[in-house]
Image (cartoon, rainbow, N blue to C red; front, side):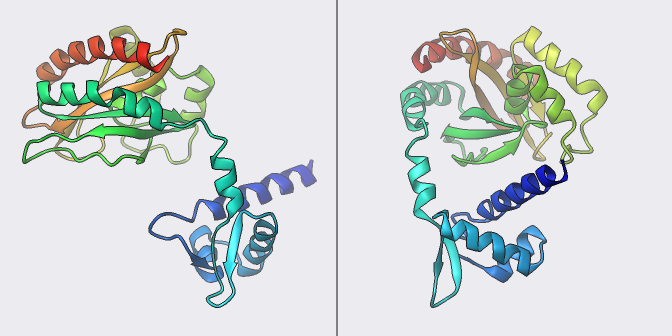
Length: 248
């Protein structure tokens, strides 16, 4: 049992190393990586050596910095592409933006996070700016709550047990809130994640009857009252039904 725990810990640490690399930090030194994941440099060095040998990292001998290796790229080519549904739904999202005047986003659930795979920015001077590829926790926000509400119960339990659970969200009420969302068919948020921001989100149901994504509209609270969001929820739901047929 102890060997198994140690093995799992080693895997977790190796994955933590890979997650250190971003667009902004695409090459990192041993010291930088050790600081990011709070491990001793000797431990990190052993993990880096293994990851390099397996092709998951490359080391620049002149700078002694590491970057992601070709094995990562090879694995990424086997992933189902997200570009197709994102591109397919773009015209419908643009029509929603033009009709309602606010930023429209499309999210998928990935574990205990949501990932924005498409966004159409509002044309208004004061607006929510949505970055494609952004990852956000499932605990807070309209889209997060929609994806959590329709996720398997075991995912909801894992979410409640997450050490990163925000102190501002009451765990004891959360599951009841999710049940209410499935009953209503939409979720709203008012300054839950950002001061001055409001949002409404609805599920997109695929041909097989399961929720495949969340469609959201967001903007400043000065333009999005609770009554307005409830009206927009109806419009989003109508469009989401058509989008679900397109996503399959």
